[in-house]
Length: 238
Image (cartoon, rainbow, N blue to C red):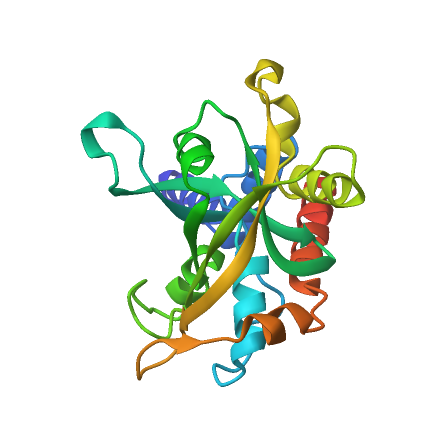
């Protein structure tokens, strides 16, 4: 009898530790929370383009990143004139309509906006590491095959009520829904970069420079983000 009891307990333990059990447990956890996901699904459905396709790669990387490191010229007294880097949420359009232009939701209370009020020049950096592609390929973030894109130019505030303002705000709130709950007394505005130079490291052999005109003219829908969003919606409904 003791042997049968031991065998039954062992089988129950194995069953609870099986992958299917953990999948069900994770599904139940995700299904009972709002925005909390214990393991964010890796995206994308479609991988990055061939590294030789410079324009396509540049547009892919910006569109598939949720945040950017933005460097400005600091006005802080202790480091005035120094470069200063900050993290900002970014979009380049809606999930299904990429423009290649980086848009930001900013407050005058933030480091970056204060710097830009004195000097509008900035450089933003986004990396393929953000998509988890490099991690999955076992590339270090500094590996040249882990593409990083650097856009330099002048930042410009978009006039409220214009078609571009309405489009960019909808795109920002679509990708970053928490923005709808940001404190309303922070005088939020939308800024975009007028790109002057595009530098990219996407393979061995040093940086490459992408012509701005070709970059902006490239017809890229950005379907990867839409696919990713639809997968997350289906996952939460399961």
